[in-house]
Image (cartoon, rainbow, N blue to C red; front, side):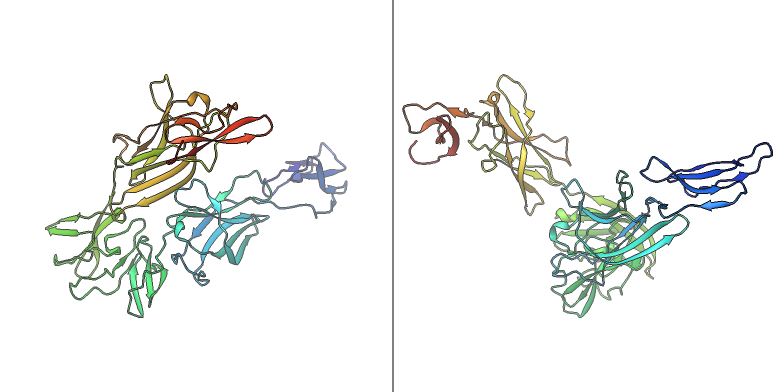
Length: 480
């Protein structure tokens, strides 16, 4: 008997073994073998005797294996409202993903703004449906899930993933990324109608349905959803909801509408938007730009029947350079030799970083050096405040591990604009390092040690070696 193959390897799909009689050779026994996952020894499946009878062995250890094939699709429902006590179980999100066989574990992951890694999101799976492919022995699983949105999730990125539980060394399979577009919980607070529709503030694929003063996010059923055109030129919110594949179109928010006869309805007063329509040229001016003004804008030209004939779009970027407002405050607890810093004695840099957010770095100039260099510090806290001009002031608290060679060094913080990288850098005031030795030998005077004018050294007895170890403390008034 001559066979084309004798071993079925892992992941080789269906093993086809063809055997035929050879007149010139005779075999009395033929063994068909396979290898179990994780096992080095060969195990027998069947035996063919000299009469060509097939004897099957026990098959209970044979396992069909199928890795996740990479098919994954996440769909977030637009009902994304921060501040609800409970999410709406009839408006759930879904993930459709191939989990292989045996089925891997599905995870929902989120990466918030200003974060660099995805973390597992605690969700509740309400329904799970499996579609099994008996040919490839793989499972496509659909899960519907829900979770509560919070304000810090706005513009976060969400994805679903699956692990291959049979081989933990395999990489994860990830779905497409979806971006959270929160609807303010008070979006409908001024509504008097029992039901009213509004454009979504940031997501062109959906709109907001107000049931009294309660908002609901609703997906667009088609590319364009239009409610009746206003019958007059009175100032009101635009009620045309225009959805497009990737950008926010001109008619999707409270902006100016140009009618077919050239009349302009100015629907947004706070940004001082003016529109001029001369022949085939349309000029849009935003005289009072703000953070929320920056986005994709477009114009859709429609005929008298409302049919779209042409469109044009562009992106408006609102940028503010960092102002010359940066203040560095070094805490006097500057002790060389600790090998660490005290988290309750941190240093502070407060600086205007413009918009979009610029970058703050700490620099040091050691004695006998001619150039500042970036100092590696641990940022323990970071807070931001925005003003009406769209500019951001950031305050960071950081720790420094001081060494003896830093004595009398100069430290400053530096701000660089990410939007205008060629602009001059912004520097804070310079502050000088005043190193305190880690321990001082006891002197006759048990009072206060003078160091610099605004600080003094607090003595703490270190019993084991009778040395006076130092803890620098602020002293702004009283005797020294």
